[in-house]
Length: 208
Image (tube, rainbow, N blue to C red; front, side, top):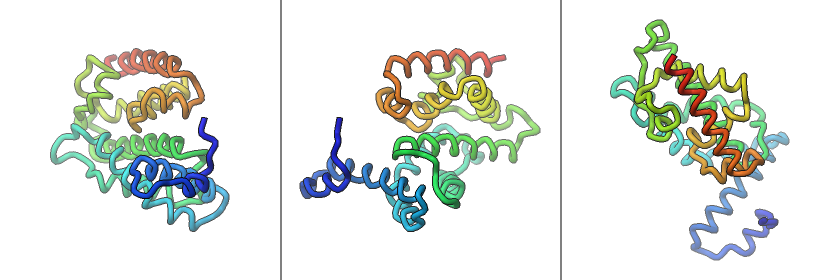
Protein backbone atom coordinates (compact mmCIF):
# COMPACT_ATOMS: atom_id res chain seq x y z
CA UNK A 1 0.00 0.00 0.00
CA UNK A 2 1.30 3.46 -0.89
CA UNK A 3 1.57 5.57 2.27
CA UNK A 4 3.18 8.60 0.64
CA UNK A 5 1.37 11.91 0.88
CA UNK A 6 0.90 14.21 -2.15
CA UNK A 7 3.69 16.35 -0.68
CA UNK A 8 6.04 13.35 -0.62
CA UNK A 9 5.22 12.66 -4.25
CA UNK A 10 6.03 16.24 -5.19
CA UNK A 11 9.47 15.98 -3.64
CA UNK A 12 10.34 12.69 -5.37
CA UNK A 13 8.63 13.40 -8.71
CA UNK A 14 11.07 13.13 -11.64
CA UNK A 15 10.57 15.88 -14.16
CA UNK A 16 8.87 14.74 -17.35
CA UNK A 17 7.48 11.44 -16.04
CA UNK A 18 3.86 11.25 -17.36
CA UNK A 19 2.76 8.39 -15.09
CA UNK A 20 4.10 10.12 -11.98
CA UNK A 21 2.45 13.38 -13.01
CA UNK A 22 -0.85 11.50 -13.37
CA UNK A 23 -0.47 10.03 -9.89
CA UNK A 24 0.31 13.48 -8.51
CA UNK A 25 -2.79 14.88 -10.21
CA UNK A 26 -4.90 12.18 -8.56
CA UNK A 27 -3.43 13.06 -5.18
CA UNK A 28 -4.18 16.72 -5.78
CA UNK A 29 -7.80 15.97 -6.71
CA UNK A 30 -8.33 14.00 -3.51
CA UNK A 31 -6.78 16.72 -1.37
CA UNK A 32 -8.77 19.48 -3.07
CA UNK A 33 -11.99 17.51 -2.56
CA UNK A 34 -11.20 17.19 1.14
CA UNK A 35 -10.36 20.90 1.40
CA UNK A 36 -13.54 21.90 -0.42
CA UNK A 37 -15.66 19.67 1.81
CA UNK A 38 -14.08 21.41 4.78
CA UNK A 39 -15.18 24.83 3.56
CA UNK A 40 -12.30 25.95 1.34
CA UNK A 41 -14.12 27.58 -1.59
CA UNK A 42 -10.84 28.27 -3.38
CA UNK A 43 -10.21 24.52 -3.55
CA UNK A 44 -13.31 24.16 -5.73
CA UNK A 45 -11.87 26.58 -8.29
CA UNK A 46 -8.56 24.70 -8.38
CA UNK A 47 -10.37 21.38 -8.63
CA UNK A 48 -12.43 22.18 -11.74
CA UNK A 49 -9.62 22.20 -14.35
CA UNK A 50 -8.12 19.02 -12.89
CA UNK A 51 -11.31 16.98 -13.36
CA UNK A 52 -12.69 18.60 -16.52
CA UNK A 53 -10.96 16.22 -18.94
CA UNK A 54 -12.22 13.18 -17.07
CA UNK A 55 -15.75 14.59 -17.04
CA UNK A 56 -15.53 14.98 -20.82
CA UNK A 57 -14.31 11.39 -21.24
CA UNK A 58 -17.14 10.05 -19.10
CA UNK A 59 -19.76 12.14 -20.92
CA UNK A 60 -18.49 11.04 -24.33
CA UNK A 61 -18.53 7.40 -23.27
CA UNK A 62 -22.05 7.66 -21.90
CA UNK A 63 -23.34 9.41 -25.03
CA UNK A 64 -21.99 6.87 -27.51
CA UNK A 65 -24.79 5.71 -29.76
CA UNK A 66 -27.16 8.60 -29.06
CA UNK A 67 -29.46 9.09 -32.10
CA UNK A 68 -28.25 11.84 -34.43
CA UNK A 69 -30.33 14.99 -33.94
CA UNK A 70 -31.68 13.79 -30.61
CA UNK A 71 -28.58 13.71 -28.47
CA UNK A 72 -27.18 15.84 -25.71
CA UNK A 73 -23.80 17.25 -26.67
CA UNK A 74 -20.82 16.22 -24.58
CA UNK A 75 -20.10 19.81 -23.56
CA UNK A 76 -23.72 20.39 -22.56
CA UNK A 77 -23.77 17.29 -20.39
CA UNK A 78 -20.47 18.21 -18.72
CA UNK A 79 -21.72 21.76 -18.09
CA UNK A 80 -25.00 20.58 -16.53
CA UNK A 81 -23.22 18.08 -14.28
CA UNK A 82 -20.69 20.74 -13.34
CA UNK A 83 -23.48 23.07 -12.22
CA UNK A 84 -25.16 20.35 -10.18
CA UNK A 85 -21.96 19.36 -8.44
CA UNK A 86 -19.98 22.57 -8.10
CA UNK A 87 -22.76 25.01 -7.25
CA UNK A 88 -22.59 24.09 -3.59
CA UNK A 89 -20.39 23.70 -0.56
CA UNK A 90 -18.82 20.38 -1.47
CA UNK A 91 -19.43 16.84 -2.66
CA UNK A 92 -19.73 14.15 0.05
CA UNK A 93 -16.86 11.86 -0.89
CA UNK A 94 -13.49 10.81 0.49
CA UNK A 95 -11.39 10.66 -2.65
CA UNK A 96 -11.14 11.12 -6.40
CA UNK A 97 -12.68 7.77 -7.32
CA UNK A 98 -15.72 8.25 -5.11
CA UNK A 99 -16.14 11.69 -6.68
CA UNK A 100 -16.30 10.24 -10.19
CA UNK A 101 -18.77 7.63 -8.99
CA UNK A 102 -21.04 10.51 -7.97
CA UNK A 103 -20.38 12.17 -11.33
CA UNK A 104 -21.54 8.99 -13.12
CA UNK A 105 -24.83 9.02 -11.23
CA UNK A 106 -25.39 12.71 -11.97
CA UNK A 107 -24.69 12.21 -15.69
CA UNK A 108 -27.19 9.39 -15.87
CA UNK A 109 -29.79 11.50 -14.07
CA UNK A 110 -29.25 14.46 -16.41
CA UNK A 111 -29.88 12.25 -19.46
CA UNK A 112 -33.01 10.79 -17.89
CA UNK A 113 -34.29 14.29 -17.10
CA UNK A 114 -33.63 15.41 -20.69
CA UNK A 115 -35.36 12.34 -22.10
CA UNK A 116 -38.42 12.99 -19.95
CA UNK A 117 -38.62 16.59 -21.08
CA UNK A 118 -38.26 15.72 -24.75
CA UNK A 119 -40.62 12.81 -25.00
CA UNK A 120 -41.61 11.33 -21.70
CA UNK A 121 -45.20 11.10 -22.85
CA UNK A 122 -44.18 8.90 -25.77
CA UNK A 123 -42.39 6.00 -24.16
CA UNK A 124 -39.98 4.40 -26.56
CA UNK A 125 -39.58 7.61 -28.53
CA UNK A 126 -36.24 8.32 -26.88
CA UNK A 127 -34.61 4.95 -27.32
CA UNK A 128 -30.90 5.01 -27.89
CA UNK A 129 -28.28 2.45 -28.79
CA UNK A 130 -26.16 2.02 -25.70
CA UNK A 131 -22.38 1.59 -25.50
CA UNK A 132 -21.11 -1.96 -25.81
CA UNK A 133 -20.38 -2.12 -22.09
CA UNK A 134 -23.97 -1.28 -21.21
CA UNK A 135 -25.35 -3.49 -23.96
CA UNK A 136 -23.37 -6.39 -22.57
CA UNK A 137 -24.83 -5.68 -19.16
CA UNK A 138 -28.43 -6.00 -20.29
CA UNK A 139 -28.02 -8.23 -23.32
CA UNK A 140 -29.91 -9.37 -25.38
CA UNK A 141 -31.76 -6.01 -25.57
CA UNK A 142 -29.77 -4.06 -28.25
CA UNK A 143 -31.60 -0.77 -27.66
CA UNK A 144 -32.78 0.78 -24.45
CA UNK A 145 -35.45 3.29 -23.63
CA UNK A 146 -33.29 5.72 -21.67
CA UNK A 147 -36.10 6.62 -19.30
CA UNK A 148 -36.81 2.97 -18.61
CA UNK A 149 -33.11 2.28 -18.07
CA UNK A 150 -32.87 5.14 -15.57
CA UNK A 151 -35.97 3.97 -13.76
CA UNK A 152 -34.63 0.42 -13.63
CA UNK A 153 -31.41 1.64 -12.02
CA UNK A 154 -33.38 3.79 -9.57
CA UNK A 155 -35.45 0.77 -8.61
CA UNK A 156 -32.30 -1.28 -8.25
CA UNK A 157 -30.87 1.40 -5.95
CA UNK A 158 -33.92 1.12 -3.70
CA UNK A 159 -33.58 -2.66 -3.57
CA UNK A 160 -29.79 -2.84 -3.40
CA UNK A 161 -27.85 0.44 -3.27
CA UNK A 162 -24.53 -1.40 -3.31
CA UNK A 163 -25.34 -3.26 -6.50
CA UNK A 164 -26.52 -0.09 -8.24
CA UNK A 165 -23.36 1.75 -7.26
CA UNK A 166 -21.17 -1.03 -8.63
CA UNK A 167 -23.03 -0.76 -11.97
CA UNK A 168 -22.54 3.01 -12.08
CA UNK A 169 -18.86 2.83 -11.19
CA UNK A 170 -17.97 0.06 -13.63
CA UNK A 171 -20.34 0.54 -16.56
CA UNK A 172 -20.86 4.31 -16.50
CA UNK A 173 -17.80 5.82 -14.82
CA UNK A 174 -15.61 3.24 -16.56
CA UNK A 175 -13.60 2.03 -13.58
CA UNK A 176 -12.05 -1.43 -13.81
CA UNK A 177 -13.22 -4.31 -11.65
CA UNK A 178 -10.23 -3.76 -9.38
CA UNK A 179 -10.79 0.01 -9.11
CA UNK A 180 -14.49 -0.51 -8.41
CA UNK A 181 -13.60 -3.03 -5.71
CA UNK A 182 -11.20 -0.53 -4.14
CA UNK A 183 -13.83 2.21 -4.06
CA UNK A 184 -16.48 -0.11 -2.65
CA UNK A 185 -14.12 -1.66 -0.13
CA UNK A 186 -14.72 -5.22 -1.32
CA UNK A 187 -12.91 -7.98 -3.17
CA UNK A 188 -12.94 -8.05 -7.00
CA UNK A 189 -14.83 -11.35 -7.01
CA UNK A 190 -17.63 -9.65 -5.03
CA UNK A 191 -17.83 -6.89 -7.65
CA UNK A 192 -18.11 -9.52 -10.40
CA UNK A 193 -20.83 -11.31 -8.45
CA UNK A 194 -22.83 -8.09 -8.01
CA UNK A 195 -22.46 -7.20 -11.69
CA UNK A 196 -23.73 -10.63 -12.68
CA UNK A 197 -26.77 -10.24 -10.44
CA UNK A 198 -27.35 -6.70 -11.74
CA UNK A 199 -27.28 -7.93 -15.33
CA UNK A 200 -30.05 -10.42 -14.58
CA UNK A 201 -32.09 -7.84 -12.65
CA UNK A 202 -31.82 -5.10 -15.31
CA UNK A 203 -32.52 -7.52 -18.11
CA UNK A 204 -35.72 -8.62 -16.38
CA UNK A 205 -36.77 -5.03 -15.72
CA UNK A 206 -36.14 -3.86 -19.28
CA UNK A 207 -37.68 -6.81 -21.12
CA UNK A 208 -40.96 -7.02 -19.25
